[in-house]
Structures are given as structure tokens and as C-alpha cells.
Length: 209
Image 1 (cartoon, helix red, strand yellow):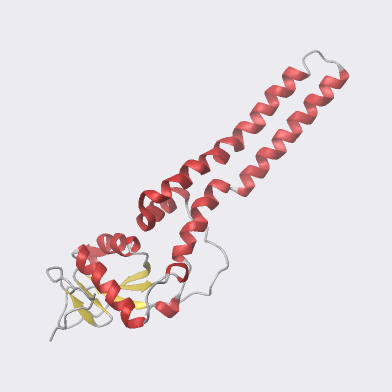
Image 2: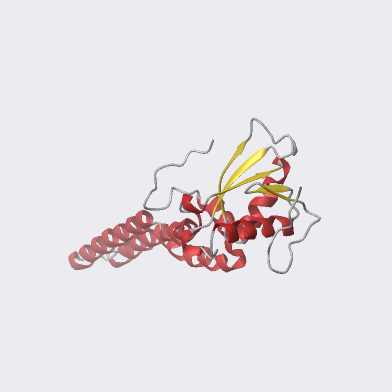
């Protein structure tokens, strides 16, 4: 059984580069600008104090009282600015806040999906690319008698910020279509998905007996 944790207000402490990779699976190349923009404060955090230290040495080199005092002010201000940048972690927030918009728990939209263990990476990429969140995955102790290859169960949620499904049935249809297009053998909300089959134009899934 899946355990649903208490909701949290902000993003978890994502590791930066894994978060970048995850966000790219949701948004593709649209996420790249966040990494580029984040490079500015990331580089500035250590560089600003260093630049301030060199500037203070240059300004106070003649040992005149005013210049020495000004050098101390420059060194202190640049050190404080660097510390503020490090604490704010703007480079991290640009990625983490956006990723959290996709991965904030939304259990009301949860759909149970059973897949083959080998298909987990493929299913994850396909679901994220369609703005669905594979919130949790576990190995099932008892596989379906008529589908013993479906050994993994995924709890798929639709993020509140990206919820476009008209209702629960439409959400199941959309997940079904995503996994079918990706070539993933699955069971979505109790309905079978076979890679060789394609949903009809309305997005409805074929029935299996």
C-alpha cells in the first residue's frame, strides 16, 4: 500500500543536478534557461567576496586612513553580499520551485498504474513529459493472475498547477494514451494497455475481455 505523507508548503531539499534532470523530463529544453540564469548568482556567491577583498587591498594600499577604512567597508560589504547569495540559493530555487509545481502532492487525482519493472524508466519519462507525476513506485507482492509480468505499481498524480483533465475518467484515458504511445505494457485504473494498440481519435481506450 502507498503511504500519503502530510503536505508540505515548499519544495523538498532537492539535489540540484538530479532536480535539473527531472525538470527537463517535465519541460524539455524549456527548462534550460533556468540553469543558465541560475549560473549568475551561483558564480557571484564566491566571486563577490573575493573581488571585494582584492578591491579593499587596492584601495587601502597607500595606508591612508580614509582609504584603509573604505577598504574595510568594501571587504565587509562584499563578504556579506556573498553570504546572502549563498543563503538565498537563487540558482537552486529557479529549478526547485518549478519542479515543485509538478511534484507537489495532489492525491485527489491519484491513479493506480501497474507496469513491468523493466518499463519503469520509460514510463516515468513518458508520464512526466505529459505533465503527470509518478509520485511513488513499489514492487507488488502479489501480481495479477492474468498479468504476472506487471510487478510494479505506480501512483500517478496530476499536478494541481497543470491539471487539464476534465474528470477522473478523462485522466485515466490520458494516462492510458501516454503509456500506449510510449510502448509501455500497463494496467491503468484496472484497464489493460498493450503497446501494439493505439487509442482511437477520441482518446478512448479499447476494451479488453
